[in-house]
Structure formats: structure tokens, C-alpha cells
Length: 268
Image (cartoon, rainbow, N blue to C red; front, side, top):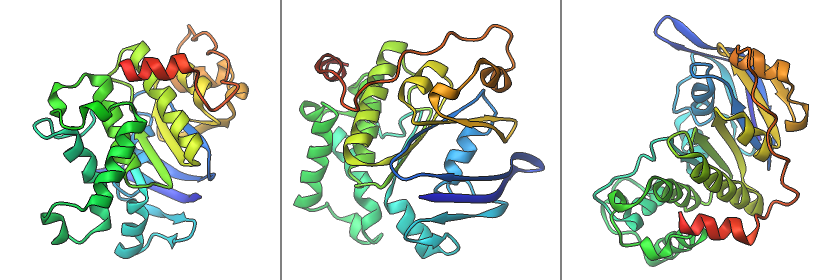
């Protein structure tokens, strides 16, 4: 679906991605794993050029090489982004925040006016899917961290994306809430056939939800494996630690979470 070729990214004189070449497959739930500063967020943001490339190319299926503004606009329109710190406007309602996901479909002038009924219905449907329809008119700053991240997922869904990029979406959440949010995100992506690239710190979550794990260290890819193939040596190379984490929980047998898990998500 997306092909990076010899991509290098620098911050000033410091190189944070070193000639990375990798292809991301359609429909996969891919996890970028590695320590802080490994280059996960930079690689993720390079996939929609939120982080400009210093060299190399990015090719997207159906669009081609992203070498002009129009192609990039089309790609971003169909790419939902979920952030670690939510990037929501606290004083606005949940509904207002979700509708921002539709702005890429309109001209700058059109966005000065309220969006139409069709967009509002789509926003409510997206909100219902994350279990927060009853919070549509609540201010975002009145929600819990887990609820705010689910609003972020709904905002991405309202774009009707082909690709979702999630930059450490559960890093600020407690372990139980993080697992619920990951369950929801994984289920929706699989149900809708949305490709996903998610950066994480947590090895156990990567093992549980990923179809593919790409490990990064010092701006380079050090492993590209299935969860079952991820070894303790791989983890050691990623985190350079002597005490390795215990293997993660078994992979889910179905893309659909249990009724208990979905109930727990709605209660978060």
C-alpha cells in the first residue's frame, strides 16, 4: 500500500532515519516497536509527510510517488491520524472535534460554514462505534483520558480512511485502559479493512495485536517479523536491556473482541 525507498530524515544536523526502505501491506495492523528516540514517531509521520523527507521517496498505491501538493492532499484525506496527546480542543464539544476530520474534503472557504447533515450523521455513526454517542455534546475537557483517545479514533474514522497512523496512542493511559483502547482500534481496523501503522513502547501489546512488528533502533530497522517470530534477542537489540520482558499474551483468535471487552470499552 505504501512504499518507502531510501528515506532519510534529519533534525538539523542529526540524522534520525537512515535510508529506510520498507513497504507496508494493505490491511495489515503493523506495530513500530522500539525505545524512545529510536525513530518510531519520525517514521510514522513520514508516512503522510507530516515530517518532511530529506531524501528518498514515498509511493502510495493508487496515487503514485508523492511528489506534488495535489497527490499529498489526496493521500492525507484518506489517512487518519491518532496522537498520543489526543490533539483535541478541550473547550469544544466532542461532536465539533470529530467533525474536524471532515475538513480535508472541503476548500478552506467552505470550512468557514457549518458542515452538512451527511457529515454530521457520519460523525455520529463514528462516535457510536467507539461507544461515546451519549457524550456527543459534552466538552472534551470533561472526558477521561481513555474517552478522549476514543474521540481521537472517531475523528480518524470520520475521514473514511484507507490508512490509520497512530503515534503511541496509549502511552498516556493506564495499562487496563490502554488495552481497551487497543482492542477497540484493532477491532475497527480489521472490521473495516483499514490498514494501520501504530507506534508502541509496550512489547506485550505489540505481540497481542500486531500482524507484523517492525523494530527500530537509532533510526534503523533492526527486525521485521511476525509477533510469533519476535525473539528475546530482537527485544534486547531494541531496548538494550539485560532483563527482558516476559512474552506477551496469546494472539487473539478472532478479530472481534469478546462482549466483555466491548462492554469494558464503553465503560471507560
